[in-house]
Length: 139
Image 1 (cartoon, helix red, strand yellow):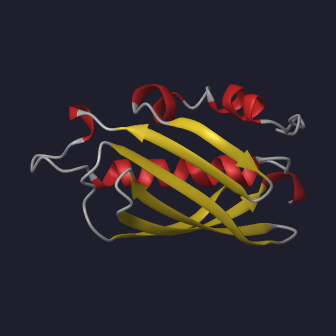
Image 2 (cartoon, helix red, strand yellow):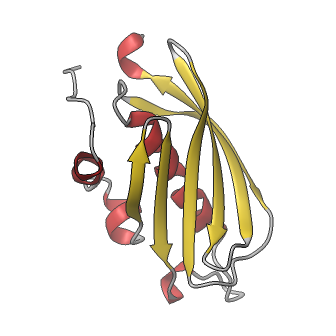
């Protein structure tokens, strides 16, 4: 495996994750902020994000949480992938924008742990998730 150049800026994060066609291009998620142990991403909701009941589909909440984790865990760090995750859906979004904020809980030699909170633009906490990551270059 060739060593990837470390992601050290918001622009570098956007360029690197632009290759994540599903999360960024297909769903429309945007990377808003990134710094050591933290990221914030957003998604303008539209009809394609709805389930049959007219609410935001569960997979949308998971996708935005997953990309927030990926951006935070890979910022100025070795390449990291999701090892394990769980999500708890709290209440449907009522707003028109979703936000996911990933915050590092712990970073070890081989693994890391992040909490990701998904809210809408009305301040509603829609979902919370926990991601454990696996650092590829340390193993």
